[in-house]
Length: 335
Image 1 (cartoon, helix red, strand yellow):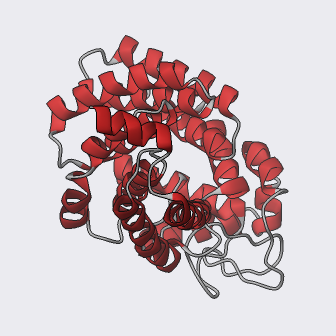
Image 2 (spheres, one colour; image 1 turned 180 degrees about the vertical axis):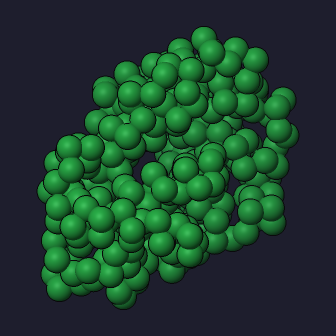
């Protein structure tokens, strides 16, 4: 970390400070996206330690932590890749201090800066493929799904062409494509692809693996969206304790597994009162942890809060009218 910080500071100071540095043609894309980031007046950048220019933050840091110039974050990420190789790639999307992903306009700024940095590399250079993934994820995170799909499909084609035997990365790339179809509202298309990707991920790494748990969450979303609530419940029921034990209760994937299972429970039209109460309790605990770990303004925390409120309302409604609609009660009785 010390070498990383020294390298970043040296590059920024050599350019004459963050204002001149951000004006560099190499980071025009990052600068353009940074214009829509939330600014923090009078704060100092934790990388260059200067306060001139726009200082932003979009992670889970609190207080004065995590505040930085976009250009400094771009240079920090570039330096991390040079110094640490593949381990440094995470700096293009994740805060070095809180270890949580950036979001919103800052995420897009870093995604654009990443692509600008590596797009001129040879087609066989892995850095170019990583840049496609990072850019696609940033576009999807801010709701630009059509563009994200184009990027992810290009990334999948690249991996299949140059690394056809790399099943692990091909599987991850296939999941990125499938998940983007989900966000585009093409749920049956997403479901078909996610089923195949999850089966492949299980074969490659087993049910307890982080990538497998993330794939299960994605598959569950499509199952719920297409009305297959019981299938989603069966998929995630045993994975909640697996994620909590294997990844920890504060891990981002664990939080998503808990949230998705609760969603599958309370959105089921045939859910019992007990299932609805379980969903509310699960969402309440997940909201508390997400607020503590990610912060109240993080997009995922806001999603959990909305789901928690909906689940509570659904549970109250069910307590007034009975847990099952009449038609479903008759169908269950006849079965």
